[in-house]
Length: 424
Ligand SMILES: Cc1ncc(COP(=O)(O)O)c(C=O)c1O
Image (cartoon, rainbow, N blue to C red; front, side, top):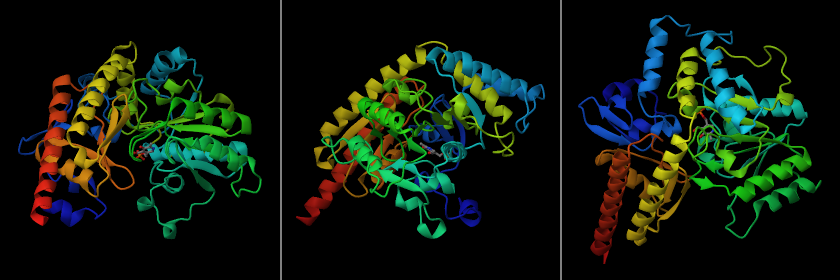
């Protein structure tokens, strides 16, 4: 580990939570260089929905490289890009009656978010954007400005211009409809909140702590946007690509956003990001928004394979089946440890157990790692243990991982009990 401590910036994060040197990975298993095995419930923060070293993706990439397929092409036309666009249109967009155009951005999620915010402001000629409490949209200046958590922001390195935060669904508890709240601000010319160019929202907040917006809330948000001529941007970077059971996470609400930011699992583990936009919003001049790594061809090759999973219902059904296992197991586990005050929430294959007492979720993740499970925390205070296994995980591995979670919480509950007795 010394080289990482010596050479790599203090900013490094996950290496501290999982202090081993990983070497190989396959499906939902990771191996360190000593050959120790770890079940992966983190899936690269939602990047590996199709698993590590997916055999279909691996085969296509090896073949492409072996025939000297072009790897870097700026935004030139390539065979790999054509195949991806055709597959996206035929497998995903047309069957869903979505007529989006596709803009390839720089390779990470935050590039897609920056592009969406810039385009919305340009088209509407308004600078304000509405974002939501606990929202997470990336680390570059524009995306950071619409990210809630103070930990990532510091007003000294960039004031958040032209962004207003509004309460997400459930922020004030179940009895307050936060769309009414938003409406009041937007309709009152004296509220201090200017009419925004766009609203940016996650249908399920991943980094924010697995907060699931209700269908009614999402529908009301869409209606409000239509009524007041505001663009609706869905950030589907973490919970798109089938995570909630449908390809796009907004499908369950039957809404049609104006733009969708998309990245993470679309590249099957390779960097690829894009903005999907209604054709009438495509008001760019040629080359007006550019970048060296817009759509890498290995990403396209991988992505075309990923989309193959959506040619039938099998993956959606598998997500429903395994999601139900996660839910029932987590609810059972939560009932077993009332002293930890656990609260379970989620949808599809994105779940969280909120453990509100200080440090409990982080300690649970550490206990789990010692038992061979890679699992992360989420939420403003890292108070949520976050379940994000690959969608293609085997049922037996899924159950094995959930058992480790149960053992980890049991160990924690016991430790707390001992501390309590020690004190009494
Ligand atoms: C919803 C959402 N938007 C944007 C991003 C930023 O993506 P990236 O880290 O690839 O820039 C993330 C990353 O976790 C995310 O979860």
